[in-house]
Image (cartoon, rainbow, N blue to C red; front, side):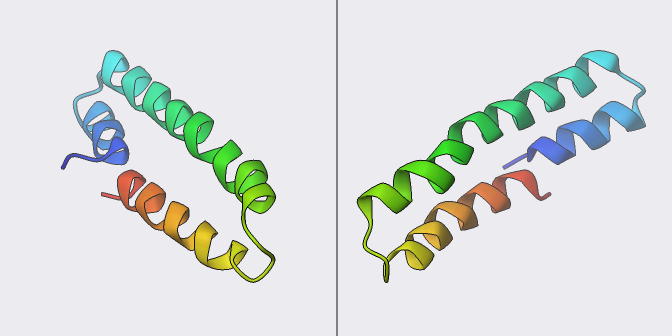
Length: 68
């Protein structure tokens, strides 16, 4: 799977503004989707002892998407 940062790298490599803007859009979309889940919704629905595990479950795929 081609990552968001890979798209950004290709944008810099080929000096392509559309690729750079696409990478920027996808990173913003990623933050829009995963930010509220991690920082506001999970603590409301999980117990105090479950928050760390729940955050890890959400954080691991989110970080693996952005890293090449």
